[in-house]
Length: 136
View (cartoon, rainbow, N blue to C red):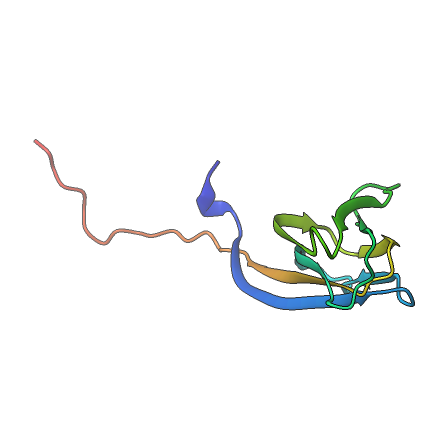
């Protein structure tokens, strides 16, 4: 593969995102505008608040991958034994739907939204102004 012909990233925009799920707001949606840019969304942490109910809290997520995608549980939190979970490299394709499947919360989710802008490198020909050296 010739890497000189591949597009390069000319600009990256990083925005932090967060939401709260609780007994009155059980669902949160991360959406993007339809454009020609590449969008990446990474979940960073999920944590219970100090006032969270003493029960199991299950969070499920659903993203755009696949035509008939179903929600998948990704975290089970409890204030006494696991009040927080951190993710590394957990990338989802927007739009992303978070749902508090069980528990009353409050539960906080933080994530990172990256927008990549690609720049097409024009193929440049470099001409040498010096004649080739005679190796004889």
